[in-house]
Length: 166
Length: 177
Image (cartoon, rainbow over all chains, first blue to last red):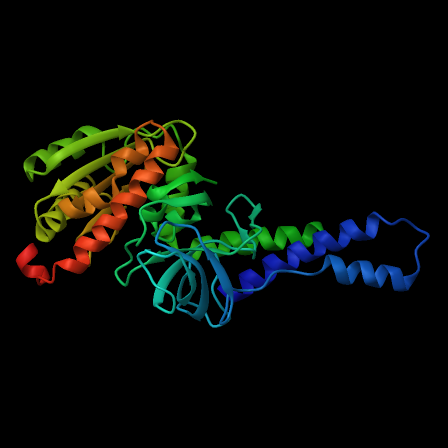
């Protein structure tokens, strides 16, 4: 059901973007140009899967992590899901070191997520907040906008540490 | 076009019907003029006084964050004390809704560990923390109005000191608690 719901949601977005691109060129376009416009406009973001590099937005000392496993879902992780990642870049004197395997919660995702009023939320980057095995955040502050869908996913701690709720 | 959007909306509603807790949560967020919440502020303060929680602080959340009205911070003396604070609040919510056909309980996060437990009851969010966790995360400094830039620098310096202390002390966790 969730996979069908996600595919239907992405289909709705796809048909909307297709309609917009069809109306904007006008009548005097060739079929080849229309095909190219459709191909460009139908590009969509994918799940966060293995070897996805994400940005770390807390003050735990890590800069970039690479996803090695998504804990929920076969295709990958989306907004609010928990992943297992390894630290690829880290600050000196930080709490986590380069090469350490950590848990993280996705707080910003480039793949869109539907809200209950029919709108969608998606971001320009993939961002993650590092947590330990029990779910407690490693850092003490979360920077940047954080959507309030994390409340339904039971990540109120990250919402509490965040300075800006989107 | 419209048929596809309508089908998506219907599928979304049918998905909501399959999971009743989401319906409860959305009704909580939708109806703002609702008279009784899961836990009122006075009831929370009474329960926290009964279980002898230390350093209880009520912080009104500023208006640009509309996801909660009040944030209550409570300190427990040990891990089990923090768990008992959370259990007492859940028990109070159950007692309040006794006899209701379908009970709606607050969502609890972090109950397995016991260092930092969040009880989310709609408009009031209760944080029960251990003493070390409260000093570490410093939630009062974040939610009371003040200068943001100085707080970040201080927090980073404090975090570095704490990392050194953690590395130096090699005592087991039970002795510390």
